[in-house]
Image (cartoon, rainbow, N blue to C red):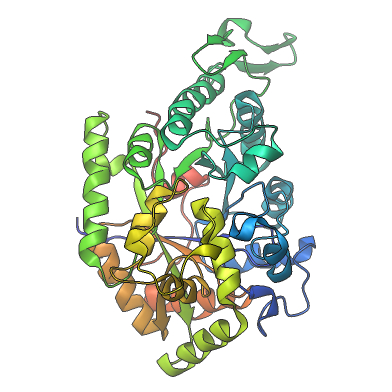
Length: 442
């Protein structure tokens, strides 16, 4: 079956902050509209809007530090609200699960800083609280600033972080499996709550971690959270092939269809090498859609976003992602010359050949995902072309103005995709795994 015959999966990515991805988002005319990002009613409105649009998931990106790589100071990050302040998304999920019945939630947790037992226990508990609608976005983190907040002098090197993460995820999966599915008897008459023969001790003593089980949480509706991963470096793709069930990938451009096809091919080859069928992992392409009722209206919205952003604010964000100080770089120097120790896949996938730092900053100002701007028909055409070329299963939409851009997705784009037969008109299944068709264990 070709991608043209399938319904797409749709998710929206944000973070618990004033300007999650778009520089100056907090200043835009269609942002908040009477809401306060610190208040629960704002997030409930977003979740209910996405559920009205039959979205699969609200996805919370997260990191634990304030960007300080640019100029060696946090001043610009604070001044322009560059992914700061950023609050804990775990606190939102139980309330949002109560405000909705079908929408899933992806939450980021780092394998570099958080204890494996804490993460396993937290996600197992949320699986119960959300009635099976929780996913874990597995990250290894990237910045020295984050490391210092957790008592380390610097972040471990890129491949070491992934080596630790392999053991970390294996340990979490062992903890989730320490209860057999039918271990919870709950026989009030016989006085037997759980069968101890089906709750297994775990004594993990590995290269990186030591942990004694079993987990304190019985299996939830999904057995374990949906496992999501976004690394795009060769080592990140190898990690994805071993563990992930949903892969989030950022194309450099919606027009570079050969690049998205190559990325999907590399992932498929890694999955085969890991002994898995490529169909086991769903790929969501990350895009920043800027919608209007007409192409001209969408272009006007994009210009409005650019007018409220700053090049310096974009460089603060990019410096933090790459773990390098771009304040010393000439704005018109080609990015091919840049070597960074931070997010390697981000370096190779985000800039376009011949692009300068100034040009990239202008694009970053309207969201980190590749931009697709236009009417619902224009945007839907580009989505279908990208899904076909990259054999993608759907899209992770980076928002520009909230709640405005989410309302545009639901009120403008979703009806167009439904008209084309590319998106559901009703939810099917009950869990997030059901929604993505990855209910089986591997």
